Figure 1 (cartoon, helix red, strand yellow):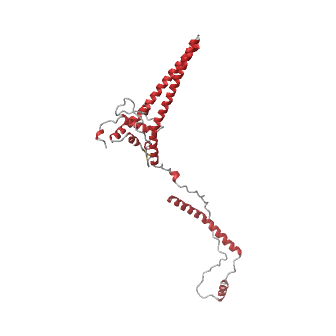
Figure 2 (cartoon, one colour):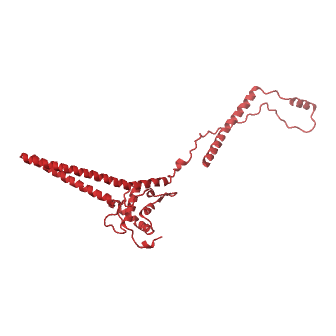
Figure 3 (cartoon, one colour):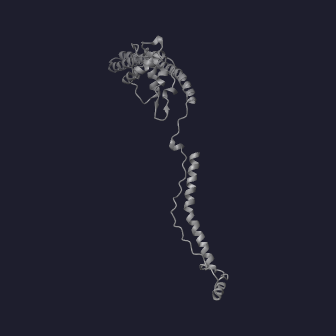
Length: 295
């Protein structure tokens, strides 16, 4: 919802400078150019009119891969207030790239002092080289001695400038670490609150051990029962005496089967069990796959 106080107005240049700084920190491999900011300018202006700060506007640059929303890396970055400034002369609503950002006033002041000391040192170095050449061309001892005294004075000035440069560098490092300490502490706190990255499906899916595919075995043909008795259909009516005698003789119990018939029965049972093994193996593999899917 647009704020009444910001309706039909443009955000200040400091708003865009914080957005550029956050994006550059979150995407170190990307170049936040002026063209990119011009493409995103309407979106950021609308976010400012809705009451969002530069940090909040930069954090809305999230993406979705079709199944889950990936939060913006800006959510894990925090910059201290005033760590960057817009370029000089930037107007309201004007966008710019990361190359145009300025450091904080303290850092910029120390950098200017360091540059001035470096220029003075180069000037003294060239002056010392000039007096050294003059001393080499001197024809009298007095001129040579004067050139040496000049060189010694210039050398003392260079040592003083070197000490000043070291002090400025130490102060510059202290200021930068002080500004970065706030950023690092906030980023460390945000790292604990960051949700864990989703695991890949290939890694999360349990891998079932592959069972060897059994070869289909042919079922053995059932062996004929040993000592089978020929069964004849019975006829109704009275049998003659000769037939009765022959029936009585045939109804007598058969002689016990030899030991070879028992071995034949055992072999038949073993063949039947071997024929059932492929079916049992496939049933066990299917059951293991179902249990793995439930877990």
